[in-house]
Image 1 (tube, rainbow over the protein chains, first blue to last red):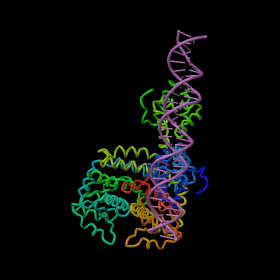
Image 2: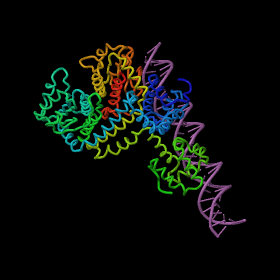
Image 3: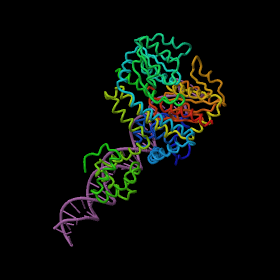
Image 4: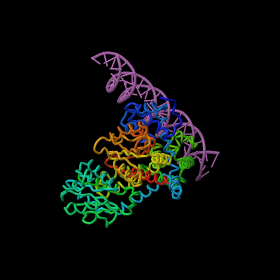
Length: 277
Length: 277
DNA sequence: TAACAGATGGAATGAATATTCTAATCTCAC
DNA sequence: GTGAGATTAGAATATTCATTCCATCTGTTA
């Protein structure tokens, strides 16, 4: 333990908690995790409330405050409250100022400016996504997936992260998934077992990965129902697809954030799970 | 006086006070002016404190709350507190409301509703991201990556898509990248060549993938400069990291859209490339 | 296995707080 | 100037709250 942690900023407190986390006892670690995750609850709640929400007895909360060098819960709470007070005023002004200053060229090369550029690009990509995807397509896609025995996923190159993510979520939800990654040989062999009882989700954006363009029509020809996620109706995975999600305005490969397709596949997977009940 | 002013937003309360101001008695008018000028004091203070600062007896404060239709000071204070909460966490309010209203309803289970939910979650995640990431950290991370001979990427389980995407972009930009995927054997062996001349980008969210937690400290001990992207300062990849990006409010694994980390790594990669000129 | 040190949970305690009550004061019409 | 009604201040009260204390439990070392 150390001297009185009197005047301390919220960020300093976070650092102190993180630093000491390992040295704390089990219960106290649990509390540390809770207060870092729910600072607002700590700022506004009573000891009893915080205790209940974090699943510990009230006395443990007080012991936690003591362990951090505070005289008690109330003293620690002041630090959490300071965060709330600081958060109210400057948010709008500073954000606008930041945006403006970064649009300029020289500053635009600084990492912070690059981040805010991507963030705002992603924001508009999401807006576009929710406008361009219609319920009809979503319903159709969900129906296909619901009927599928195995779900095959095809997304190579720059789209691979999307395919992996979808595979991860679907498997978590108990679906049988075959991720076509071409590992250890031919991607054709991996897809050989696919039949019309299965389903294929294909993801591809310009420049369309050659293997994707080659494999897709084969599976379509074998009667596998397919859901395509792509950026143009002229892409090689549109013809023969049962459902097509067109995500427009995808930037060039190196600048892609994949935000929109990630969101879409997530919604497909969870929507499938909810509809199955 | 009127019926119970139960659930009321701060803005509505302001309107109600302004409207009733003339009809109030002298003392209550004085209090009305004070609370509109010092909403933070009302949100965080006790009756005695507010009374002293506004120069009235405590009982007058309670009468004021009654005059506005509240059951007492505590009830009125909730409205002032909601203003603080809304200011600091734009995501919280909308997300909670949405979750509650939609989770149960039949409409919420339709695929289209699911998509719009994920879109709005992603939106707020992006806002939070741009608020919580500071230029200092971005600059430091960029400097580390710029100096690195090889860039090692560690992101397993649910974070794997982020690691893959970063690998893809960095390679497109001509960087030497080693993606630690554990393919065909030990992930330890893959990372064996990493030295202090290289760099590591580690990505991990709850529940932290065991292999990540195990490998990270080894690389740190070998002096490899590390950039961590995680959801808590208590995660196993924080201690010893050169730079930590904390992305808060990550939902549970199956509901994650990975939008924020995808955006961040993208900005890191491109920022690195632009700074190199 | 025994004994110890540290940690824990829950009840007891005392302080702080919101609220209510009542006597005093003020306001205004007549 | 006087009286009725509304308003107020401050003391009294009841409630909520943080804190402390102690018996119990847990994990460790001998």
